[in-house]
Image 1 (cartoon, rainbow, N blue to C red):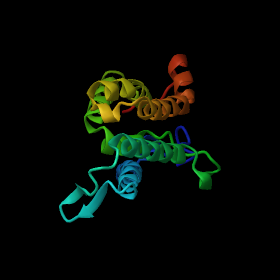
Image 2 (cartoon, rainbow, N blue to C red):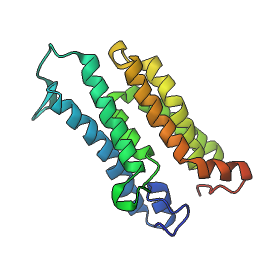
Image 3 (spheres, rainbow, N blue to C red):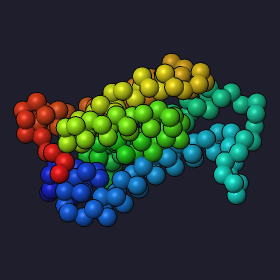
Length: 187
């Protein structure tokens, strides 16, 4: 996979190898990694416990702003760890699927809006990278617009912005290719 397309380990590049099943598995596992990091942080904070019906509130007196800030930090760390993967010499993926999974646990409505924007941009241009960049750029604004006040504090939003900026910066080669007209198009 690292010799195909962009040389990236992400689902889009895995799809270029011809294995759609492996690409879907990569996408789902990367998203699950981000989601699990946030759910684990929420569980560690003592604000949720696992029950047969899912997650339920354990301590009502814990400051929800602190809990969501810690969960956003976990999301940021998941994205950071995916982008700078230690066992790949700090050359991992672009963090898009991991961010989608992580922030689906924190801002599900905002993720839906960002995914709709992604789909629209890819459908119109056939550039997955442009759709990813557009979704990442819009995401902090959508979070600010749609999330409740405890999830729109300045520290929380700064972690969202940092995650989005990491994803956009990680697309620097794609941006160069887009500007040069040599970027890979989705078939």
